[in-house]
Length: 274
Length: 357
Image (cartoon, rainbow over all chains, first blue to last red; front, side):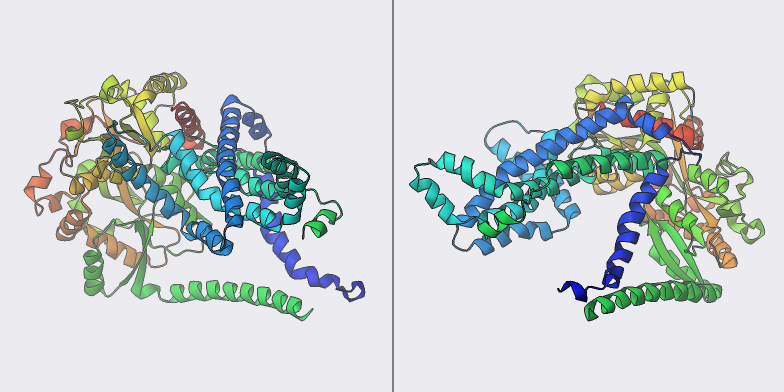
């Protein structure tokens, strides 16, 4: 669009949208975080957050979010790589994405059945001659289900990055005598790092505040900040403390966004890759 | 340029249309109050035939909506914009709603059938003289267990849950009052205790229970017990009744140290538009034949004494559903402890859950 054609009021619909659905909620959360349970102004919520309970919860949340992101990446990267090598890559990609069209709650309930004592996994284990295992309500089941749910979201950006990779770079690396591993380390990985970073963002951030799966799959044996927020708002009705935890989550997420920010050097890189 | 203006106008139009619809809905329901009532009740908590019968007999149309938690229900009524004529809070929630001035007093002259209720369930501490509420169903908190999955363990006392043979087998309900209350009860303290030492002692004892805890979950427990996925669960008598209906192996007991006695009650919230119709509905439900039919459908325990005579004697004599008076002596109703104490209970409960491995 030519600059002289630009009219600031084109922005109005977007401004209205952002004001109501982005800025207002965040301002409200900050506002509520300064009130205690009786509705009096207070700073104590912020002091309370640094008590051991919430610090441990924060560490817990980060640890599980890290595990979930790590295993998701571990599975998603090779999958995305092999999909780009297949003949009908769009079809394969679609097949990977399809499960994410199914309602999250439904998938989670299905796992209760699959992982249960009388479910197919245990049937298989006992058929091999081992004892029944308690799979449901463990950290393992929690991480497993969360990884399963997040995999499509990790595969998509990595697939796009790999797909845009110019194959002549790989040929060049090969011609210059690089081994397969060196090619991956020096060429493929750096050039797809932006995809990985976007993938990490879309997985790590929601994983920090997962709460439904912590109850249904982990039986509340994994407690995250999401659980604490839910409890503060719905049961204790301490909106102040709930909002304070939410404020810290926003801060954590902001930090993560900064750490995983994709660097654009004047768009040069993209021009070349495309 | 054009699409932008169009989209801006579209957002505004949609916004105004929504406002219009809300206004229209409120208008419409306000004008239609004389011949309809809106009932806001727990899910699957009334016999649909009873509603039909009421509509036939009185010509008042029943609009029926459901909720799944006391807090959610109160939130919706407090925010306004609704016109519920009747809702069904639990006892502690009645105290909270009274404090927030969300209830209308009942007109007892319009409720002659109130005489059918067992006097034991009237004039209770959470609502003296039943100014705001009438009891709908009641029950206890106890232990549901499946003997076929156990090795002869019995449950007479809360302490049985601490038995080392139950490692990783006990399911608890995801609710602070129930779990902390069980800890207090097992020490013979009141489950309404606000004494920090007593609560601390109960939490120390509950910390020793963690090796036995399989999970802390909500309503999913019914399905897990029915599928024989779990052997022992802390649960309410009503939920236990659901389990026993689907799986005959399951049994339910109330431990001897005592436990919680709960009530779901009908009240008329401030949002009511058809107060006369609401009273007619309550009086209809209190009729012995209707109460008996409804109890038979819902499967919970009715406080309606006159209805008991019309019901299956086998059910009425079952002490799990209808405990005798001696048993009732050990049961205690939750009092509203105030938001501050509720916060303390929940903080402890969060720590308890964090201690689970």
